[in-house]
Length: 200
Image (tube, rainbow, N blue to C red; front, side, top):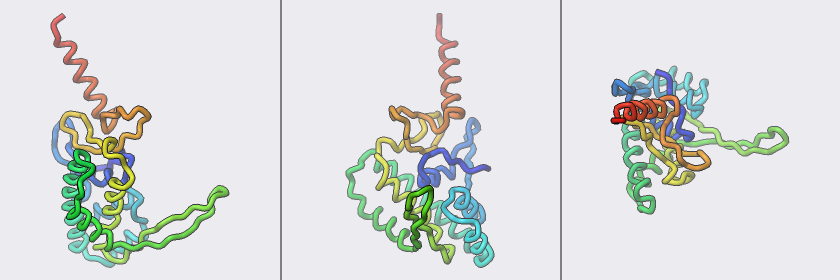
């Protein structure tokens, strides 16, 4: 199944790697094994293809599958924490911060200055040498939810049965649905049918 990139924030796109397929409510899992996790990281532009290919060659399938399993467990944990943070943004969250920082310590990066269109830009590039370091890529994107986003704009889709997350970057901050053509359209159809059933 094709990855969903509709959250406007990579950490939330990571949370959205499992979701209910509507209207059947079957569960889709986009990082079910190590190969799928590598593929998702490349699609999300968090990992370059040469590094993914090198890791795939050097690490056994079992090792990559273990990393994917850790990523799924982290995703579940992060989703729960984000839901609590939205309700109580002033919480201390000491144990959560410690766990997140432990994962971040696995990663390293190098920095460079790039000249583009008459401007100087500073960039950070991850340096991934071993499969277990991959979790730091998604941990950093989850960390940026807490540091860069307003909790009231981090939302779950209002569509019935939908569990997808997004950052509401609309001007009026009234976005309700993960997608206007999916859950938004289903809500409009349901509202229309309800109006049709009302006595005249």
